Length: 290
Image (cartoon, rainbow, N blue to C red; front, side, top):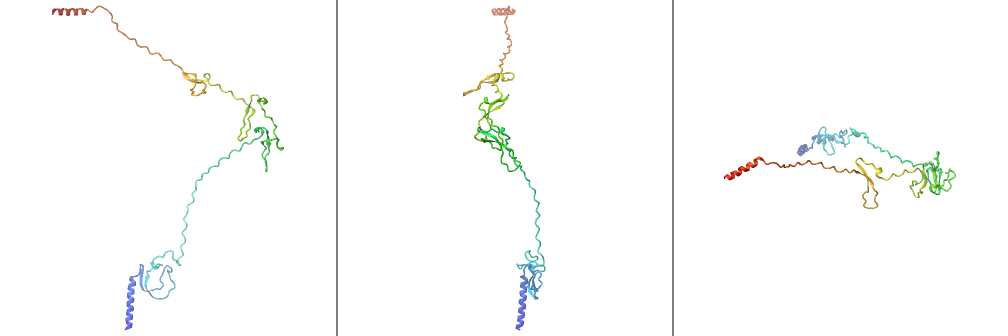
């Protein structure tokens, strides 16, 4: 009797638990009374080695596997290891567009400064008093060497150069003989650094004579005008001399037009009118008749 009671209790508990478990299964799960002990999971979707036993409980539906969160899913995430499927190859890098050529503005370099003027001989160089010009060969380490250059030196020039014959500087214009058409005058050489050489005497072409001062004799005036020497306004001395100016000619005013003659009526003396006496007589007689 006791054994029958235990069998009945076991059957009742199994039926009750199965009924409760059937209604407590999650999404995409079904309750089985005898299922495999090795359920397919995302870590092992196709188990090959499993113990032979009958296990009841909630199992994933066909086509679903259990993930790490104890949920039945149709497809596992890519983070799970799947030995039956190789990992997908990495996506190819996006194609990069070829670099566009950029506009480059080429600014030409500035032109080099002109080389300094090179003196060719001593005739182009003027030395201060007490010095003389000499053609000096500069140091040269590689051929071809530049030609000698004129330089002002003190005393005798070096023996390796050909000196220019010394010419005494004329003190006055009487010591300088100029060719025909030239005159003696003082010339100042261009100097950029002190001390500068004093002006020296040399032959130069004569300067043109200065123009004559302005006057009415060398001033042209237009028709209808004439020249007059007028002194400009000068509030402070010294004042400028008179200058020629063109002024309009004087035109006398024209006489007024003649007036038309005025006709004045003149009364001429003559005999009385014949009706004047009769009218008077008739009136006189009439008055007497009354």
